[in-house]
Length: 475
Image (cartoon, rainbow, N blue to C red; front, side, top):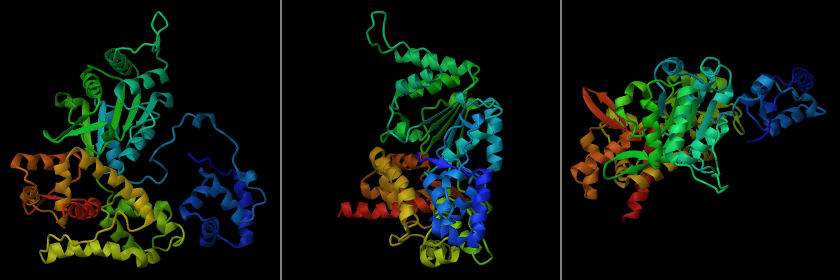
């Protein structure tokens, strides 16, 4: 993690004097250009919030501060030392107030396991971390040692149950003998470790966030479900939920629902599917990141937000691009450069609604990749989702690619008909669609009293591209 610095009150006075000499205001475009940063970062600097060290130095040098070291706040409050470094939650968080309130009430009630579900980048990790911050004074009672976060997206550490459980117990000060009475290295019976972990969580109030759990699941194409690669994880959750009472709580984030969670304990666990930000939340996000919204620029931001269906990660990336070089906050200039990509989506959806052209394999949607930052931050994550789908459920992968021709919601039979060309029988077709439902890669909507199926605009952008690849492979 890159080093961060924040300014002291005395330091800000020095910077302010130097700024006045340059004739700049506190959020001057000339300043952001000279420092190669964004308005949002400059605002964080003035609010005495930690920012990247290199950017901190450039901000100071841009106004000719004699020594940037004199600007740094050298204090280190003891009350902040144990605060975790969050993966996704930050001061740019907006919206979902009602959902946060409801989930906190559930956490403080009888539910002990929460599963946050949705497509990549929809805000699952940020929500889990937001909940943790909100619970620090009540559930955690200000003791961050009672919080544990395990991220399964990275493979630096073993993700099997035994290894993770040992790490947790040892971190919490529990004795795990590594040698027997003869001094020989030993492996403890995993079932004993499972029992020890569950017993500890039962008696001690810990809050655990298990992030990107889809990476420890495996699909079964014949039966159409997701289960844990290590069956001990399934046994752990079953035992955890079976407890008559429990002081600990676990929050899971996953793109796929773990089907092995026992339904008979539904009073003790809850699944929450996340959708995108609302229109008002989208504008609040743009504004909080530092964009200046004017009557002229607001319609462009609204159209961008609508095309992306409020997808938080994509909108953050776009806001960052607008705020940084070469646009430096010029929303209209960004639209003039890239607005055609949004218009392509709007045109296709309008044609489907107004002229009945509901399908087209020639649509060239590039919402996931029309700039380098979108390719780096959004496309790469969605590619992992598609690659995992292709590996675990080949028929489901074929289905999402083939059905990407649809511009609007259509009936299930339209979707399933595409697998007939792949010699899939009726049962195989339904299993493929269920696999997409379990991974939230399709959405169900009711229109004109009919249950229809659609793809999120971002998912369709990727699926259209994969469809072309699939056609090339089979020529």
